[in-house]
Length: 244
Image (cartoon, rainbow, N blue to C red; front, side, top):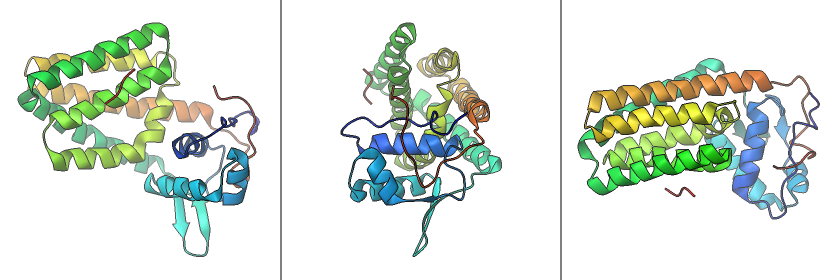
């Protein structure tokens, strides 16, 4: 696969979040190889922005563990070991399972109704084959679990690890049928929470997150490329209703 064909042309008026999504995706797929020094000037030219938002993006990439920032040495793409990724997913599975267990006890009637609404809204996006919209609903669904646990410290930890895993969780939705499998896994979680079955809710959530882990790895393994691009990229190609 050509490195140029694997890169996406940014849209006009690209935001930091959009840059972050594109560059993070290229890093985890190996388009920009571990050890590559990212050049703020090159990336700014690619996205037609100043260097200020590029530096902001670097900070987010560092928080995700995708790059290393060293004084006087710039920003370098990190080597992400499989063991590290699996370890983060293991932690995420336990944190989300704990959230779901507490949701079965603590969610208010309004929060339960909201969870059902998000779940049903995501089904419409499956029928429409709208992966981006389904992913937005998925994000809102998991946020509802964090909030419904009514544990600020647990929510804070879950959000922190979700932030680091977000590029990998995003990647899994490119696998065929992954959104429909995700919806079925969510259905088991919702059913258990509404029934007040805390252990079933925890087990369903843990199994769901571990499936996400497998999906992320399967996608990345299928997309690894041998060719890489320097310093962050010359763009080629085209870029292709759930609120928390």
